[in-house]
Image (cartoon, rainbow, N blue to C red; front, side):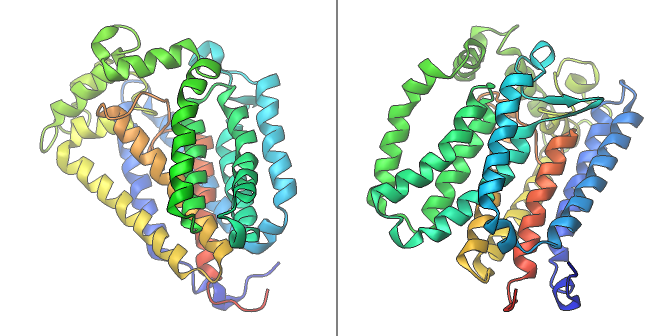
Length: 368
């Protein structure tokens, strides 16, 4: 399928540049975080992940987002099958405490990252088909039930952070579609009621401990509270301008765990200070604003819903990661988009970016 030249001219290169700048910051911070671990291999792997991400973007641009939406049933089935496969064949509990990965030969990936993209497409299609009756309880129940199946499968891995991401972008897409305040209130009440049910039925003991130590890290300073305490120390050490690259005490001397993945922001804050952290957050804000503008300019509601889902997904991951490093959120083990080390997460976020660019590129296209 050949993309018309006039469509190529409509690619939002400014959004791509912003994301590239964020990726470059990520490469620098990964080099610093892994300075004593042989950073060359980490940098090479991350560059390959970024390159693969842009290849994925190009492939996605060749496929009209409406075509993807028409395939929502196969996409939905495949997404759920991947999540079921994790429950059966998943690995990772010995190293990370949960079986969230699928290993094929020497290749390992986290299916839930890709399932998020698939479910966003499916939800956008379902919401678009039912937008006239979205205020009716049966329609709302159908949409939430549609999202609940993969959500439960992810929760069973267990993966609290990704489950929360599903909740966040699902509710965000529904509310954006024009849900009335009465339904919003009812949904909020249901969410509050479900908290104790989730605590009893889905959360593992270590997840409960994370939440309790989030409320008071000093309950277990050398155990579940260790990550939060060391992270806040690193962020505080950075002050205004930071200690300088490769000079962070918490990161360079091994006190800060998972410093190149989950706690990469702590490394940045310690070594580049408030100024460096502010620059990264500003770039994230610019990225999200550009995506929101693309949603507003989308040719149809379907495209707007897809972009909205991506915005809420990325926004949640950014807030959750930075929030846990400074003590505003419990430690959920979710990386920082386009910055943290990790092939699957980088590739899935690039695919999400590809969907946004896809919608923007076809904003004025009439004949499909």
